[in-house]
Amino acid sequence: MTIAKAMHNIEKNLVLVQKKIEQSAISCKRNPEHITLLAVSKTKPIADIIAAYEYGQRDFGENYLQEAEQKIAELTDKDIIWHYIGPIQSNKTRKISELFDWVHSVDRLKIARRLNETHAADKAPLNILLQVNIENEPSKSGILPDEILPLAKQIETFHRLKLRGLMAIPAIHKDPEQQRKPFAQMREALTQLQQIYPDCDTLSMGMTGDMQAAIAEGSTLVRIGTAIFGARANKTTR
Ligand SMILES: *Cc1c(COP(=O)(O)O)cnc(C)c1O
Image 1 (tube, protein in one colour):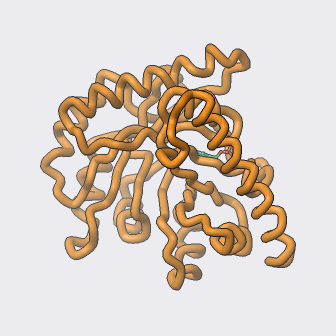
Image 2: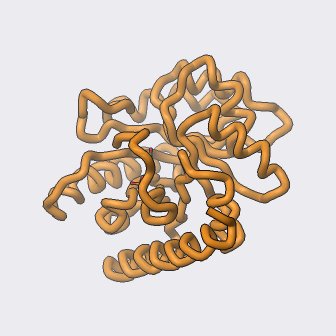
């Protein structure tokens, strides 16, 4: 697809997604400006990222380090804020801390320690979120809610990291009320964390299928792929 064609679709999609965020926020009396749109560009070509960028999108999320490395290298002239949202192998922490501004998927002390060790001292601290397995699903990574405070406490001494909040990927539930439950639990978990760490201002939750429920329960950052860039080839699962 040419950049012009990609631009047309992606621009249209961004308008729709922004509208949906706005409507979801307004319907629960929240300020839409308090919700950041993260465009999840995994598996999508650089032309798509450029199209979204031209339209004004600045935050982009990637899951696969190798793929992200290539894209980031080709887009160094653009003021993009890169978010790493995929699983982290501990031997990849150096690359991740070098390339990204945010890491949403910190789920153990070892990873945090290594990100802290490898993040360049002359750069701004790396923004991190703790990934929470809020529904305790065996197939999902992330810490359990009662592990949040102990891990945050251990991370306190890591001065090249800045703990900004929590991230979750709950299962899709057909019933809208049911869908809100895990997001509500995440909101409560963030409130608890904020009692001790008031700088924690970020709740990364909500994807194409559940952004409305996530926003209703206080999401400050929605991670949207499909609704912006279209369906992906069958490479990823929730
Ligand atoms: C792929 C992915 C998304 C985007 O999902 P969509 O359903 O395409 O919006 C968001 N968050 C994470 C962690 C992902 O892996």
